[in-house]
Image 1 (cartoon, rainbow, N blue to C red):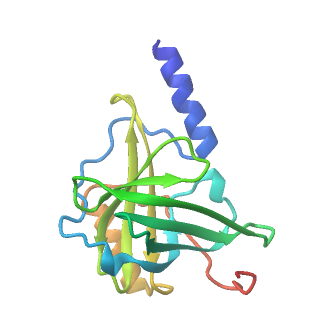
Image 2 (image 1 turned 90 degrees about the vertical axis):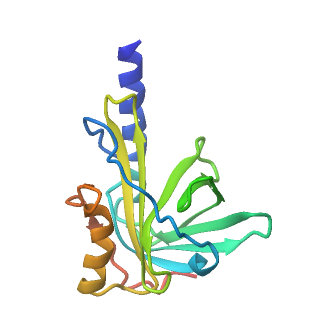
Image 3 (image 1 turned 30 degrees about the horizontal axis):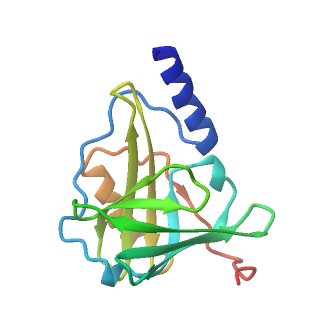
Length: 184
C-alpha cells in the first residue's frame, strides 16, 4: 500500500511539475480579514514556484470576476515559450476559513487550495497552496501577483508573507512581463 501511495505522489509531482518535499506542509494562517470585492480584477504574475505546466511561460496574469452566485470567476493566461497564447478558466469558492479558497480549474480533476497569505488589494498578493501526503511529504506552489510589475521593495514585502511562516522561497522564479504584445 505504501508503495502505491508513493508512486501516486510521484506521478502527481511529475504531472504537475512540483517537487515532492519531505515532512509536512508548513503551518500558516491565511489572511483572516480577506475580502473578495477589492481582490477582483487583473493581477500580473511576478513570481512563482516552478511547475512543469508553466515552464517557459511569460506575461502570465490572473483575472478574477464576480460570478454573481457566490463564486469568483478565474481566468489565468499568458504566453507559452514559443509565443502562443494559453489560457485556462475556472472558479474559486469561499471556504469557512477566511483567505482560504477552493480552486476549480476546467479540465483539472481535483480541487486546489488557494490560500491568500497577504494582500493589500492595490499592489500585491501572496498566494500559497500546499498538499500534505499523510505526513510523508508535501508538494507546494506559491505565487506573487501584482497589479503591476512590482518594485524590489514591493517584492520583498510580498515574499515576507511566505518567510514569516517558514515557507522556503528559494525556488521562486520571476515571470517576465515584457514583450507581452501577443496577448489579446
